[in-house]
Length: 371
Length: 250
Image (cartoon, rainbow over all chains, first blue to last red):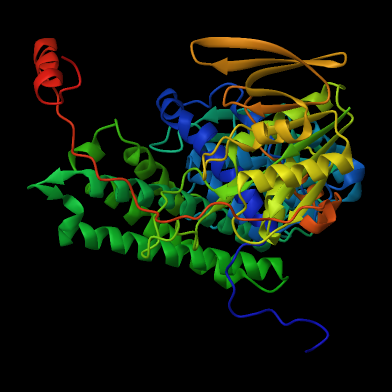
């Protein structure tokens, strides 16, 4: 026996805390998220009171220090990924909205200054949902998340922000937006934008999926920001932010794909054609098996990236590989989910068409859900 | 007022259970376990009494092997103040459970004991009533409403054909029905905090009880598979089938 236990290869069991979290998350996903997902998708809006209900789970306030009103728990990328996975089983878009403030909170804890933490974090500890988000993506064909083209220029009173962002979750209603921009051509930095200052416009975007998420475009025309809007000391670790976001997206994809798999398994065992369940046909059974195999691969890659992040090891490569695999497989699982239900899958009566549209976003989005 | 709630570790209600191949029991290998839903309602009711200022302390007790500490922790995460585990091995029958709970009651002296009306594994619906008989405490079973009124508790019971309200002198025993309340979700911070709450472990001997088995399970088998139903064309056809095929009416 050595004094310090070496990390074991290979235990993928959940801890007792994580199992208890899972209980809460799975029940919430089934009773509060899945139950309203279809109606919300059709309305293109989140049901009233939904986000406040998610706030009762305490996702955002968990890692906030007790002195600021939070629970003061150690931040765990693995537990965060598991929670996102379990919730996304209910609905991807609603979950992404619910955890968007977490991305803001975690980045502030990670890279913000003490003064910024004291100013903003208590707002997330009041028991109701406080809408905050992060704005990374930009509307151009050559978009690279690590090279923003939004610019911030130092001026006497602080900074002047110019440029545009797109596909910002909760973009219409977020009271705090963390905007990633190039600072004085020196490198990327993050800025806390509060409310809608002069020169900033928010425009709701219409997308094929994630219709409840209020994805919006933000434009900044000579927006004046105070000096303390700059996150931390300005040396923003953009790559880390992007990598954590990718793990979050992967976890959401895994949860949603698990929903697809559970649904089609029930369906193919119940649906009778030619006198027997269609699962007796190999063409069907192989598709379902492939789905399960791909999903397990997605899950393990996501957990591995999250686990390395949690241990403080480099995880850029693992997050990237997971993201690529999840993007591809999630699309495949989404479309196979529709295909396995045949005409019923195309029909809006079954949820597989929502999942198909939502999962399509995994290959498009970046930088929206920090774990 | 101190409230004691009993919680049981059972197969999660979403699990499709299977009988073991040898027919000796239900197969619990790799099966998700959870707090019995009726017990969860009991915990919620106790926590609400505390939030309303009526109860001062909520103690959650469970009987079983070490694994049942997980369900005690769930109760603590939902708002109970401390936990007690009575450590036993193997299946414990309702009468033994009632005797052990009587032992806990004698130690703790609660004013109110809230239990689920039954657990969803055995479905016996016996423990609360047996406990009432053993302790001589008043009992209000199948509660859909519980209201403390001074040194009394008024319990609205779901009985065949309607609702009945009984007024019990404290200390009393209440068993919960499904409609008493809707349990909250254990929030993540409360799950973490539950770890720091005290949890004592007793043995049956500490409580002066020797667990005995009075029942022997002969066989566990799944129910016979049902034939698929049919849609009838008319009321006349339905009546005809009930009369002549099913022979349930004449």
